[in-house]
Amino acid sequence: MKGTLMLSWILIICLSQVAVRSQYYSDTLPYRPRPPKVTNLHFFMHELTGVTAVVLTQANITSNNSSVPFASLVAVNDPLRTGPEPDSEVIGNVQGIALLAGMNASSTQYIDFGFNTGKFNGSSLSVFSRGEPGLAVVGGRGRFMMATGTALFNPILINATNVIIEFNVTVIHY
Image (cartoon, rainbow, N blue to C red; front, side):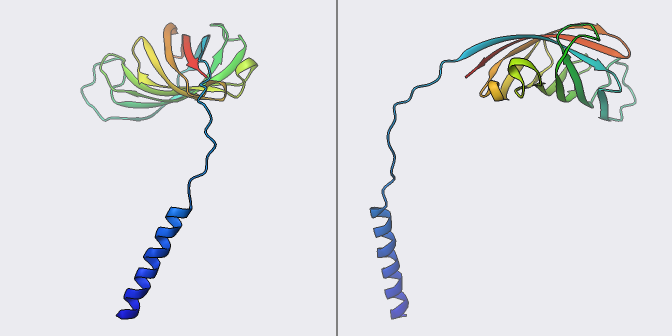
C-alpha cells in the first residue's frame, strides 16, 4: 500500500512538471482575412425524367390526387449547359437528391453543382434548401471554398420527359 501511494505521488509530481515545462510554441501572426469575391453565374440544368432523374423511393399513399408524387426521394445527375438548347456546351453537372414532401411540388433539395471546364474547372457549389424561388448556397470546394449565396431558378421547360431550368447564382467566396 505504501509503495503504491509513493508511486502515485511520484507520477503526479512528474506529470505536473511536464505540463509546466512544455509551453505551447507559436509565432503570432496578425490576422489578415482575404477579401471576399462576388461571382455571378448563369447556366442551365437539363434533366431527362427517368434517365438523369430517378425516383429512388416513394411512400405508399392510396389517396394522392396531386400530379406531383408526394413523399418521393429522387436522385439527380443532370448536365449543366451554357444555354437552354440541348446541344449547347456542357460545363459541368448537377448531382444530388430531392425530397418531394409537399402537396404542391415543393421539395427539399441537396444538390452539388460541379464544374469541369473553364475558369471554375474542378470547383463545385453545394446547395441545400427548400425548392422555393431560390436555393441557399451553403458551401463549395476549389475556387468556391467557404461559399455562401443564393441560386435563383426559373423553369424554362417542364414536360413529361424533359426539364430545363435556368439558374442565376450569386456566390460570395474567398
